Amino acid sequence: MYFMKYIATFYTHFGAFSFHRRLEKLGDESVKLIAAPRKISVSCGTAVSFSQEFNPETMADEDTEAIYLIEDNSFTLIYHNE
Image 1 (tube, rainbow, N blue to C red):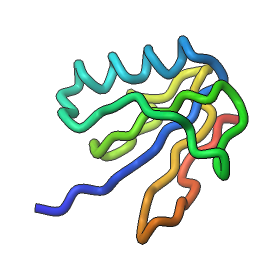
Image 2 (image 1 turned 180 degrees about the vertical axis):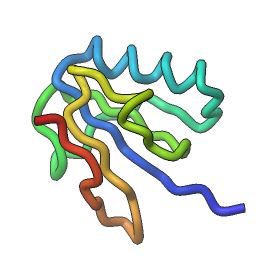
Image 3 (image 1 turned 30 degrees about the vertical axis):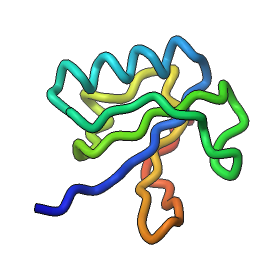
């Protein structure tokens, strides 16, 4: 089974920690707090990597900056909080 890999970036550190807890509760065993790659974020510096399919209605909140799909070592923006 193939799992997609995502990275979420945030406006605040609190947002990153909240997102991490939310995904743990949703059962994503791959969820990890990581340093945000500089090429995709300059906000809080903390990001979350995960593999559960992204659903903005149940996962995103006001602190979520953006969600990127990782494919072949490149980042594709799939969600941005306006």
